Image 1 (cartoon, rainbow, N blue to C red):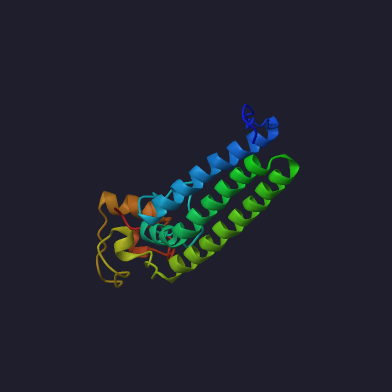
Image 2: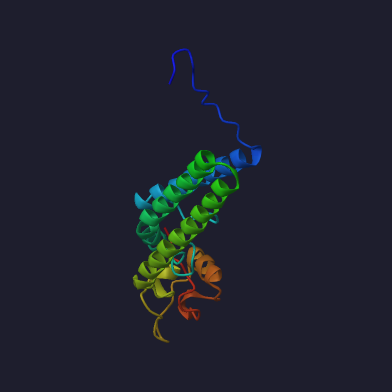
Length: 180
């Protein structure tokens, strides 16, 4: 470089490239947050985030396990989104956005792979019976015909929530969640 000359390092990006990069960075923060919360066991069961399958939503324990197992792949997916955002800004133009789109596809596949593993882990947990203590009526199984059934107001409310008229007649196996 000759004395007296400076390098002009400012680069003008089209607005759509900046928008793509910002969207990817925001998604990376969200996915990374879910991944970290899942890993440390602080992700509560919810409607929006985490591994949300029938097996993982069966109980708090299965949801926590599924998301703990899927946590590393969620963090890898967040990393791919960051790489896509950086690529959009550094490469720029249509090619940079194409690399960003590829990063998004890889991130979705990575998160999906982790979700599948998490679902299998949740499915491996033993299921609760759906009757007895799960309906909060005081037993592990249905009482014998001559045995009295505890019909407290709480037991009746829990049985109604399970879809049965009485907890002693719990007919819907695996329909109840334990009381916390």
